[in-house]
Length: 332
Ligand code: GLV
Image (cartoon, rainbow, N blue to C red; front, side):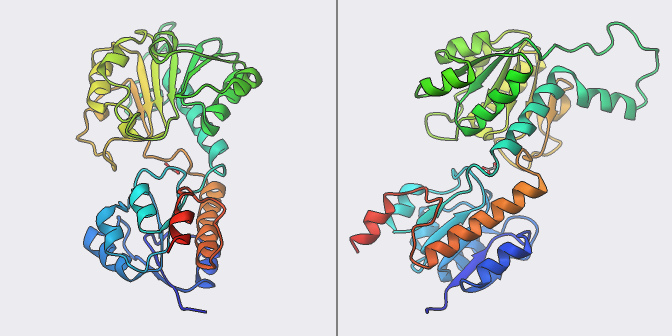
C-alpha cells in the first residue's frame, strides 16, 4: 500500500478522527491556532495526497495547480465556498463536506438568535453587567417583539432551513420561504408557503438566511432588499456572511429601517471590534458558532476523516460534492 501524506490544517481535530487519519497515512498537523499562512498551506499541499481542512482555507486554482499528488480535499464543514470546485474537478481532486450532522445544531442556534434578537436577550445581559439597570421593573423597559405568531421568512429551504421551520411551527409562527427551486413536498409537510423573493422581504417579521454562498446568492440581501422589509423586522444569518451586503445591513440597523439582526457569519472573519456592527445595540453578534456543539463538531471531524480515508482507499467517499470528478478520474 502506498504511503500517503495527509496534511491537517487545524490542531483541533479530536483524537478519534486523527486515529482514523493515521490509519490512512502519515499525518502532519498544522500547529498554529490561526489559519496556516498561505505560503505554508501551498508548501504543504504541494506534498500532500490528502488535505483535511476547515472553511478558512482557500483551496483555489493556484493551490490545486501546485499540488500534483493531491487526491482529496476533505472539508470539515457543510459549506464549501472556500474550495474552487470546478478547478478541483479539472485536477481530478475529490472534494467532500459534512452535511446533515450539523443540521439540527445549526437550527437550534438559529432559533436562539431569533429569540435573542426579538426579545433583546444579549442587550439585557449587557445592561445588567454594565450597571445600567438602575430603576425598578418598568412596563416599557426593553420591550422587544414577539416571536410566537409572527411570520418567519426562510431564505433557502434546504436541510437547515427546514429544521428551523420545524422549530418555528412549535412557536405558532406563520412560515413562508423563497428558494431558487420550489419544494412542494416540503411545502405540504411543513406548512410553508412559497413567496417570490421580494414578497418574502416584505412579509417576513423574522428573515432567516439558509442559502449557500454561490455567485447567485452573493450579496443578494442588499440595500434594495433590506429597503423592502418592515421597520419591525429582524434579519438572522447563520449561513455565510457574504450573502448579505454587510455595509448595507449596518446602515439599515443604524437608521432603524429594520428593528434588528442576529448575525453569526460575516463578510470578513474574524469580525473585530472596529466593525460598525459592534457599535449597535440592535444586533446580536456571535462568532460563527452555529454548529458549535461538542457532539456536532466531533461528528463533523469524524465524517471528514471518513471521507478522506475512503478517498485514499480508492472508494467513492460518502459525502462527495463534485461528483463529476469521477468521470474525469476514469478518463485518465
Ligand atoms: C459552517 O459554517 C459550515 O459550513 O459547516
